View 1 (cartoon, rainbow, N blue to C red):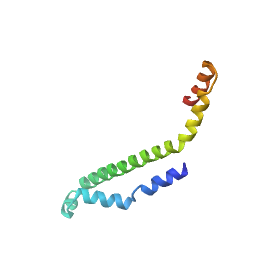
View 2 (tube, one colour):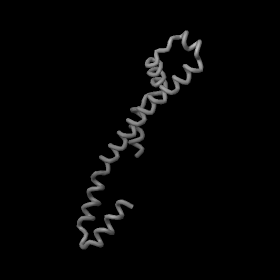
View 3 (cartoon, one colour):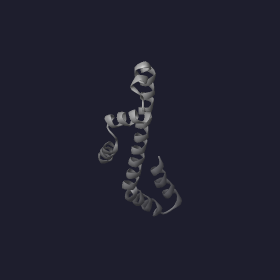
View 4 (cartoon, rainbow, N blue to C red):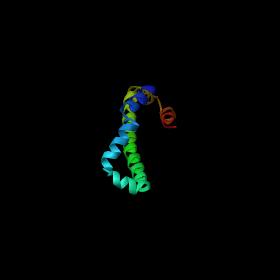
Length: 100
């Protein structure tokens, strides 16, 4: 799991990169910021948050996919064991453990 977290952090941009991207997207003029500082600050914060959330969502999706890929062999082995059970009750007992 630590490896997955490390990979996600590696792919996430720095705070400086998010600030730079936000500044470019908003394309504020210096005079606008000077006259409307509060409004500009709120807009900047909202846009930076959206950018961060997009990166965070993408990272979480990648982590989930990698985790599932890592679990395939274990899950397959467990289900092979479950499917090999003799009798319906034994099968249900073992299968229910996977989902509880």
